[in-house]
Each structure stands twice: as structure tokens, then as C-alpha cells.
Length: 113
Length: 111
Image (tube, rainbow over all chains, first blue to last red; front, side):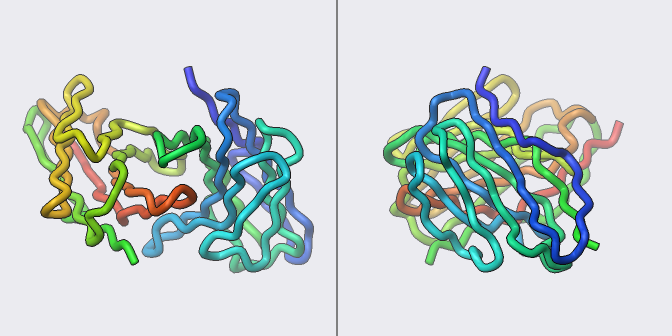
């Protein structure tokens, strides 16, 4: 059974903290994604990675960075958390090639106070 | 730019009814279309993936259709159950590195 696992379901952080969100997939997928989901705005792509150490900016990369040192792990980093980064964060993965089925993690609800 | 619309935004039905959820997209040059389910506060669960060459895909009580020329997909749920209550999202890919999502239909099945 395919699996994408996010390290935390809920996180509460203070403004200005550096925050790490971790995502691990066990399907040997090449592509991994980070989205955020907000009411009325839907899902928006933050960053995408198509290979180890490779990344591309999505629609809303400002205030975020990512790291992919191993194929199975994709980390989202909030360099200095702000209250407007309070959101639901979703990680996804797919195999290489023309966009195939996407599998999502269980989500991380981040609250920045 | 691709736009994906889901109507209605919310739907309530009594248990046992058959129902149809709608998804429209503006750019018909898609590779596939995927339907997801999302329970409150949780991630997305993939329900069905329809390739652009297919017209229908079935899984249990779910049937999804795709009409690329008209820019439409429907998700048919037969004999609805309270456990089907969730938000249903459709998504279409753009290139190889993004999915455009609709804003979803929140379904409530009343026992």
C-alpha cells in the first residue's frame, strides 16, 4: 500500500522560529511536492522536487525553502515563521513522467502564534 | 491559465441517494484528471484517476467520467452512505510539476 507520511499532524510555533516540516514516501517516487491549503484559496503549490537535490519554485515560494537530500524525503522549511503562514500543509508524491496519480500525506496543521 | 470549477460548493442528500458531483476545466489539453476525497482536517485520498484517453473509471460505488472536449468530469456516487460525507476535489495537471485543484464540493449524507 502506497504511503506518504508527514512527521506531524499538528504544530504550534512562535513568530520568528525556524520550522521544519518533514515528508517521507515509500514508493520510490521521483517527484515530491509541498502544497498549502487555505479556506477560499484551495491548494497552492509551494515547491516541487523532481530528483534528489533538485527543486523548482511553485506559485507561492516566498518565505519557504526546501531540502531533498534523499529520494524518499522532502523537507519544507519556514525560515522565520510568520502568522500568515498558519495553514494546512500537504505533501504529495508521483512517479516520473507525464503526471501520474498523486498520493498525499495526512497533512500538517501549522499554527504560528 | 487552467481554471477548475466545482459546482455545487456544498450538497446534502439523504442516505441511499445516488448523486453526481461536477468538475469543469477551461483548458482541455490535459493528460488526466484525478478525483480526491478529503475528510475534515486530514490529507487527500486518491479516489480515481482518469487518463485523457479514457471516458470512464470505476471503483466500487464510484464512477468518474471525463469529456475532454467539453471540459467536464463527473463523479457519480451510488447508494450514498453517511461515511461518504467529506469534501471531494478534482484536479488536473499542468505540465509535469503542478496540479490545478478545484475548490471542492462538501458532501453531507444524512442518515
